[in-house]
Length: 190
View 1 (spheres, rainbow, N blue to C red):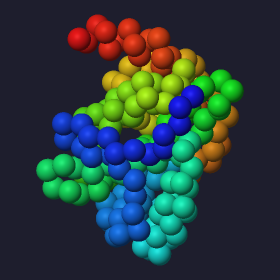
View 2 (tube, rainbow, N blue to C red):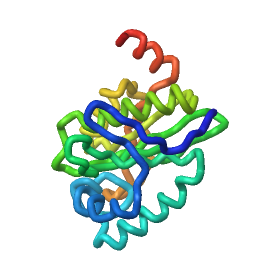
View 3 (cartoon, rainbow, N blue to C red):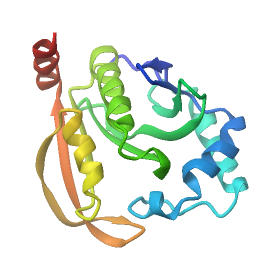
């Protein structure tokens, strides 16, 4: 593994970048304060921007670690920060990672999260050297599962009552993609 940390990544429409403390207002306004966004997540809706600042401060402090991956998703056209995507856990011994993401409801359904996800997969497979990248969602949140499918992940199975979210104890629907599968898909797209 060749950990490089949270580097700036650009796509056609997006800039994926490290957070700065000045992002607190946008993060709070655009997604962290939305109950619909946090409904299926493990963290509660932020009651005020001070909570958002504290979360950002903890992430900013982690950026010194080369194996910390937490990107803010910024729209190139407007400079608006609209969500985040991150490696929520990884296992060095197995070269595996789990991704998580969220974004403000105003930007749902525009293909933004699949665009960000594909860029992050490319970086994590091609630059860092992960062998397996996975993600999971609740059965009641199929839109997140569609993002997993759009970025090339394959359904693996449902772990019954294996997780916890703001909905309580929940089933986890798991998807993954392996490095060789990613490479094969990339070669087919050339």
